[in-house]
Image (cartoon, rainbow, N blue to C red; front, side):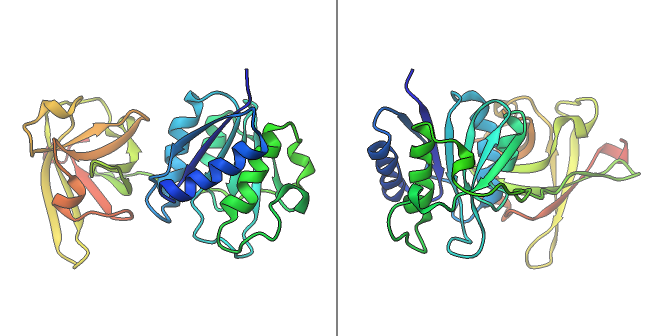
Length: 271
């Protein structure tokens, strides 16, 4: 079986294809999958959670991911070895770490600093092409991650967690918006307690202009459990709780963005 690589970026198609071309030129026997080039620009959390969700379903291999608003700064380019046997390549900004945990945990990480494994004269703004893609190719060709540079302790990704109030409220943060405008939240179904499908609850937040806002919403198993245009809470395929509008965009409807804090109050304040 040929060595396998995946690539995930926030670049769009053209620049991601350039990176894929570098990998395939330097490792011509490898199979290269562009996992996505549609991560929201600069959205490290979105990219990290997508990788965490996707990589366990991909073949073992080298997985390059780049969402890198700090490109060219002193942040390190790294390769992270995982317990499953994969190597994750990308910037040391937390992007890779949730996926590493999903692949059994990180066993070691190394700085990509040896110029022998880069393109000549790397750009300060396109490390994906000049550093990450060549590193990915050399790893596919059998180079040990430790050959690239010194071992390092990668930065974690600090994600907000849910908060449970004594009055039965559940406070969550919007982590990111998916392509349908549904909002992925920093809680899971288990944080709701025993499922009560179809039971109305109140979801409230403070809008960006300081206006308090509240809606009635139900927790449902499927989008089709509510009428088109109605809101719902549901559990996405990764286990995260989300806010959606059936056949619509919750982000557009309610003006919610990543970082907004929401509070869910169950009926009559019961937990």
